Length: 134
Image (cartoon, rainbow, N blue to C red; front, side, top):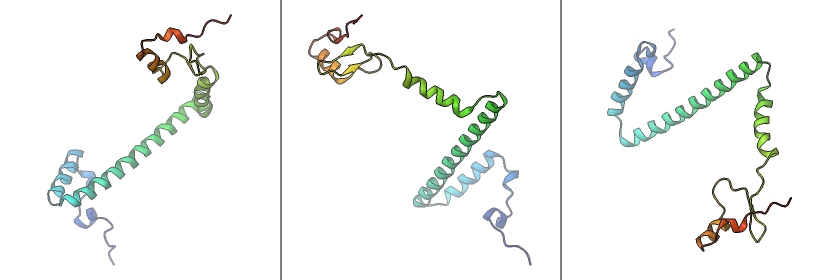
């Protein structure tokens, strides 16, 4: 007794491996021409799920390849990335500005509200500059 086809491609005797990427996309286009708007929404959802799945697979593969390279270089993958994160926490940029309420800002990134508000009122951010205490 013959085994029943498991996929539509088997049932229709379509060998996807013989089709180029463009041929596959054109086939999808031909099928899309026959679908309603609601059916196309379902197709879009399935395609997006598949896309996200393939992205996760690719990320996992890249991470595994990186781990293998680290082993070849006799480095600890996890330790290297912990060191990178740890550096930020161990050497913070000292504050350059302090508000009258004691809030501090390093001078990097977007200025905090209290600095912006002071400048909008015509003040100078230098008014809040922390004086060298040495």
